[in-house]
Image (tube, rainbow, N blue to C red; front, side):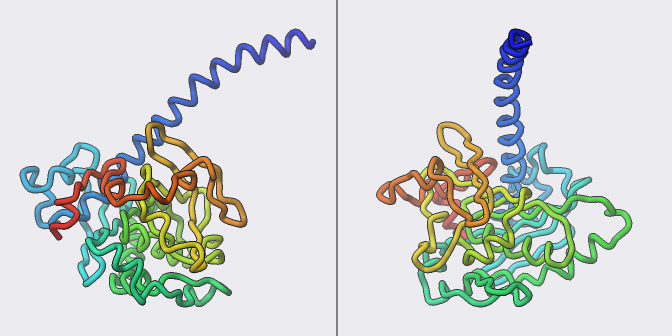
Length: 280
């Protein structure tokens, strides 16, 4: 009996090892796909169907997407796109992310009101509320032709913070969704992080990107979501757990002396570069 057990283990180990790269590859493909939506928010939406003006919009992965709703405010810009069987809610980042992270609006304010103790970044919340997207999304999802569609919230930089807030509001309203953020700053305190920490929340961090480490923990900010650390390899980090601890093997292992903004510009599906990031 013992011998049979050993033989079975020896047979299963190679199979499991073969499946791991496939699983990682599928995750990378999905992140590339969703990252293109985040990258498209930096383009002119009027050029969505013009491959000469918006290359990423016409990538085979997302060119079938139809823009249903777009918005633009002082610190918010994005769209709701339909690509059967998905509804994509994408938020754009800002050229002034460091200013937003360090100015007076970095103080926390209570939100959402229905969650005891939950506090979020005042500036991020003001930018998100300026978008007024929940009414639009609710109308779309109430339409019978979109019944059963999956909602995906995505965003890069400040857009990632707004996507996190939208995800929280949508889930509290009884909606179902998946959240994927790229280069997201910390959005709120422990209670807020516990609210949004679900198996459907991927927080992607590239190498030594400085933004995911801000605002600082000493200001009572806590990272949320399960981290995917992109470096020489793609690492699915440990789930944050009830205390929302960051996996010490992932971006938390990077020395603060190595943190930089250059790594903030390049993510799966996102190749902004310094000029693209600062031209808007």
